[in-house]
Image (cartoon, rainbow, N blue to C red; front, side, top):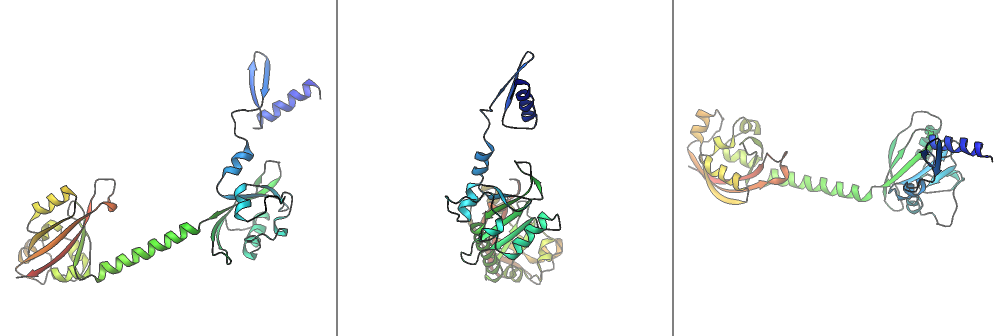
Length: 285
């Protein structure tokens, strides 16, 4: 190749984002390999998701190391250029996934994301399908990404079970529990607390304020300020509650409660809102 041809080739390569850098020296141009750039293949291999790029005939153009490891492909086996469906790879032998890939290739209606459970291992995979694009070799292709989400799904299921258990305990524990914010707004209350206060529903309590229920507002404010677990005694004047706050309690007189005050820091909003669990146990005069 003569100098003019090489110059035109390098100019086209540099303008199209190829693996070449250019510096000007007057009217001259110096083209060099981009030493500071990370090669695409190396970056591709460092991605944690298992990725395969297919051409228009569903032949494999590129795969990364994670794809080889996730699919259990022998490292010495060369799968480049082979048809994806001819390799008998698990996951890609599933008829639903195969049909979805065909839909992507035919530019039809397809699912961009799917979840797949592998029967032999009970592993759960999140699969993403990219619309037809242009590969690094200039052919129209399809990108498929797999992510093993088994651990995440198991953790999610465990959290849901824990939340269900907490809700069950909240509703069935014989002690009264009231959740409220630092300004006294009532967020929730269990059935036991409603029974202790002589109320029929949470809405009747939510219309009031925790400071309205207790005769010792200063004590609660001090506990909120300290932000630590504490045991104390609080009193409630039901007649005043009905008269001044319009809270329709069926109780009358004054009741004294043994209280365990617990700040719930996990429920903060923006750092300026504190909700606390407020168990109420007591007797009525």
